[in-house]
Amino acid sequence: MMLNVARRTVTSVLLLLLGLTASAQTPAPPTQADVLRGEYGRYRANNDLLFYHLDVRVDPVQKSISGRNTIRFRMLRDDARIQLDLHANMTVDRILLGATPLKYTRELNTVWVDFPETLRSGRTYSIDFHYSGNPKEQGRFGGMSFEKDPAGRDWIFTACEDDGASIWWPNKDQWRDEVERMNISVAVPNGLMDVSNGRLTGKTDLGDGYTRWDWAVDSPINNYNVALNIGRYEHFGERLGDLTLDYYVLPENLDKARTQFAQTGPMIEAFEKYVGEYPFRKDGFKLIEVPYAGMEHQSAVAYGNRFANGYLERDWTGVGISTKFDFIIIHESGHEWFGNSISAADVSDMWIHEGWTTYLEAVYVEHRYGQADAIRYINGVKSKAQNKQPIITQRGIHRQPDQDMYFKAALFLNTLRSVVDDDAKWWAAVRAFYQKFKHQNIMTEDVVAFFNAQLGRDLTPLFDQYLRRADLPVLELSFRPDGMMAYRWRADERAFAMPVRIGSGGNWTVIQPTTAWQTTASPLRKDTVQVATDRYYVNVATY
Ligand SMILES: [Zn+2]
Image (cartoon, rainbow, N blue to C red; front, side):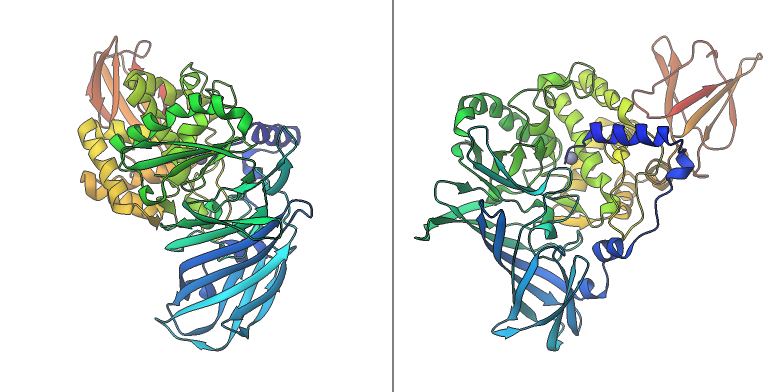
């Protein structure tokens, strides 16, 4: 997902006008809705998702959706109830186990499904959840939106990362558990096409003015990545080795797309070189034109960046580099590696999606334009970092972290690379990290444990300071008349210890400050000392 900075800025201004201070922004206590949405409770943890077949009909006139989701799962414990989710404004028509209607209870956006007999641990079950309704158009990108394209044809799309997929279809709406694979069948009026995730396996004229488009996803997929894109699309494609690249755009934009989407191949080559192979080779890669900026829908990336470089034609990081490439192609596709392949198990750890993907933007710049530009690019995001709240939010209540999960987290990864101070070792660690966790749902603890083991050092206080504390570490340098320099980190984490590069006139030396004062003889002086803050995201205080 890409951040809507404009809206956040308005919020910040409002908070200022209201005279609210940082301490007054303490998050509100979780509501019952937060807990139902975010907690991986007994009735979610008692089963493991295997497969969905979402089979729906979309009516542009009624702005409605109806159909069913077949949900196959394996029980992990004996139990007689599971938790599913469908927003309260949608209708549950019936839930069937074979031919047997199941009882269910609705609570806010949750549907508690009860079985007449205990389901047995280790056994696989399949239920058909029939539903219908008019999905709400809400959230940053619309949830499910019924719009018209510029030529007046129907253009219908879903984008529901923030509100949850249960805004438009019934599922186990959480992040920890994913189906192993999924089929998506979407009936739309003749003349329109649905483009969803995975591969097109067929289309069927239903004889009633509708055509059904069948898609198959052959990889684990999280709910919010499942997407409908319904419009009057034209298709073109290419190949990158054995990987298919398919593009779907409005007819009027074919020529512009053919030019702009030439950036896809180099993007994939860059991320394959530095991180690992494209994770959804079996499902292919697609870009699909939409009327909003973009979204990382797995193997079906939504694209709305006006076929122009930059981000909505702006210089995103303000240092003249964003304008060299199409920000949405790079950022949203980067999520195929971090977000879609390696996924956070809880939204509180969403920096694993957004921090890594923002870092991948700089990786792409390094691949195309060299490391000097990459350093300038990543330092450009400093203006967007706030350091007001910890990046990691409370687990289990589905509360999205604030925008530091993008920018501060990416700057932290750049810092970590400087701590490693050995590019061969750094890229080997990134590649090993990706290989170990691809197609898995993980938590920050997994990331920290991996890098500690891989790099053979205890980096936990660094991760904790940058991700679990609001304030940046401050490098304190105190210069004495006798030529001695005292130095330490001022940080919330008592065990915080991080090497850092200081010097003057281009002569650098690495010191190893901890949170305790150390002294050394130094030729450096208060007025001329430099700290490599382009490599280490820290504050500096000199005395
Ligand atoms: Zn993103």
